[in-house]
Length: 358
Image (cartoon, rainbow, N blue to C red; front, side, top):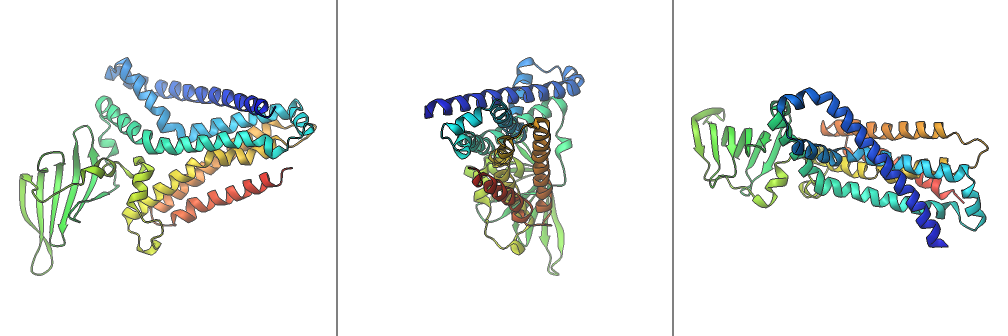
């Protein structure tokens, strides 16, 4: 008997969850294709490349659409059980509300882990592939050359600071190699995969006797014999912070470092790490919050109110996280305050409501 009701609830939830997920991705694909149809035709994009492009969008958009689908699926199944008085029958059979919700919470936990794994393994590759697609067919490289600055620590403790990495051409754009305090190289294009890294449009900046920075020499092309990359971590390091795997972000920052001692580089990494952890918890958090409203016995179950408030609440949660991410990246608030604290508050409230169930 125990296995039967668990299979029944799990099957109903997964069936509804997959239906919502398929509908959301189909709707997203139709809207996106419709808005870009002129660009697609002008670029003469092969059907195979177009299909791959939209398949990779599944990974890129999973952080919002998957929690939304899971939340709506749980509302659909639980309100149906409540409306048909199946919940009442199960309680009469000796099942507590906590036990009835257990399969939903277990599946939500698995989905949350899957979102974290998506951030770890699929999103970096999917985002890079999408950007390559846009570079090839839409010449989108210039649009991404923003004011964000990235940093790589080299094996000799020197630093490479750069504005953008062009994965298509495998080169850095607008970079600075800080060899030491007295010697800095400004490099328009840097090719790190050469046997010896080669720079194009290089300016050597040195420190004078009066401790002023001055242009020492300029080179059309220059070979950097003393520049050594740690190729084991290079692939992760060249990714923008928002595209890096969770493990790479975890290794690149010190969580317990004093916030006053963090530089911009550390704040960006810690902000993205905190954001991805909080987003991964969105599925189980949303189901915990909405489940108690769905199983409350009432003569009239206000299904529309439950759906609308739940969707508004989830979107508000993501708005809070995105706002917190902006504040944390600009070093206005600590990531733990702007993102982790609201998530913890919502989790405590949801856990309290679950604990109060019979």
